[in-house]
Amino acid sequence: MRRRRLDIVGRSYPYLVAECAGEVVGYAYAAPYRPQPAYRHTAENSVYLHPAWAGRGIGRQLMSALLVECEARGVRQIVAVIGDSANCASIGLHKTLGFREVGVLRSVGFKFGRWVDSVLMQRDLGDGDTTPP
Image (cartoon, rainbow, N blue to C red; front, side, top):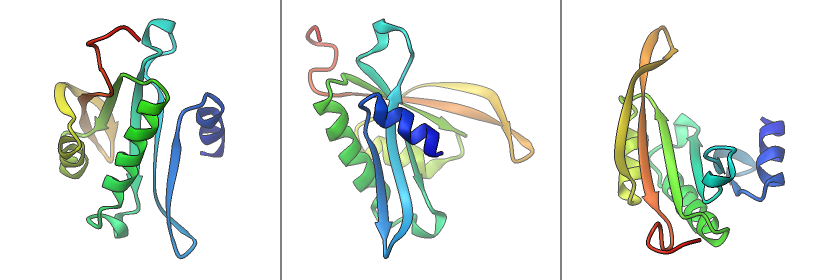
């Protein structure tokens, strides 16, 4: 996890952490969507909350700040790859922040003893695709 954070920050992508009383209760980060130069204006986001802290608005605060940081760095499209179509909390959070569902990859992961989907969601940042970068 430390290596991932250093790699992300080293590439000038945001990595945000929420703390309460010195305890990490959540984090969110953006990373390159694909390594090829054609995709340099698109990022993939991730957001995680400690289950005990869910439903308190922390995920929304993290994601809102992450979107601002990504836009300031010139990101024009942000993609969420949500592992499990049953993850209603993450799908709902992304929807309330302006993401739209753009596809579902059925049964592409296997965890917790079952097959899971990946839900793909996307949002424009700044001018999105209306102007060249």
